[in-house]
Amino acid sequence: MKECVLVTGGAGYIGSHTTVELIAAGYDVVIVDNLSNSEFKAVEGVRTITGVDIPFEQVDCGDKEALGRVFDRYKFNSIIHFAASKAVGESVEKPLLYYRNNLGSLINVLELMRDKGVRNLVFSSSCTVYGQPEVLPVTEQTPRQPATSPYGNTKQISEDIIRDTVAAYPALYGIALRYFNPIGAHPSALIGELPKGVPGNLVPYMTQTAAGLRECLSVFGDDYNTPDGSAIRDYIDITDLARAHVVAVDRMVQGKSKSHYEFFNVGTGRGVSVLELIAAFERATGVKVNHRIVGRRAGDIEKIWADTTFANQELGWKAQRKLEDTLASAWAWEKKLRGIQ
Ligand code: UD1
Image (cartoon, rainbow, N blue to C red):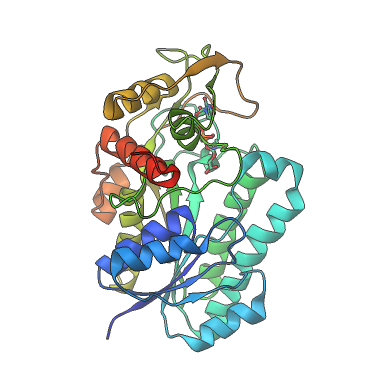
């Protein structure tokens, strides 16, 4: 019998791509999503790509009773918990919303796992837990720094909650994946990122500018201590990131975890500046991106990229897709959304 995985937030950007890779790897999937920041058409896209009528439950993970009914209705032994709020700026304005959503949902998931005998949890964490590290690249041993936003704090606290919970209930296993900057779209262009309103993240803003929806991309700062002065990030392809989740589930299902709680960096190991990313996009697509330099964005760090040695060795996972291909996929998705030939 196939193993089944519950994917919370499965209609979201990372959740939808991960569902596709789980199905490709031979898992059954049940999607839970409250559609607060996602659209049902992502589920339709995933169903089209996979040819599988994946069950979808419109449930808010903050509603423990409703989530409990999902646990009763389906039989699964692993959960990937994506469902969370993720906008850094919004989290500063509405901290209680972020603490309630992100921590309340996780606690519900863990209590239900404990009470209903579900063993494995993969958790969406973020490189934001490292803050601005003193030494680059960051390894998993790099000390975490105090969070710079309520959003970042929810990721740190969530990691701690999982660590303490699996220590107290030895039937449970957890893996936190610390994502760097996910970008791009599925090669089919049937699913991709669907930001609501004005995008806060670089790549959706860039593709919308290229598509003519936005007039000009603002580059936030050219006076950082980096070779071209713009900030550096580790941009990880969404399909590569999705595959890392499958490998993490495999590891737990196959009993290969080395401890009850593990955490891994999921990046490429390569730092790319904002200006380099724009140039790579223009090379990959042949489309110019109108941009101008403006002041730094409050709360941004200067540079971060991953040391992926541990994830490569322990998980046997490595990012594969070329940056240009990833950027071309983001553009193909944007064109599809806007009906551009
Ligand atoms: C942030 C969070 C990350 C979170 C992610 C998802 C931190 C340190 N990082 O990533 O944890 O998961 O958001 O929302 O809190 N930029 C521009 N112009 C733009 C937009 C962005 O120049 O219009 C620059 C930024 O200054 C930054 C880079 O592009 O240097 C990437 O920005 P963004 O895509 O927003 O991601 P992060 O801020 O790195």
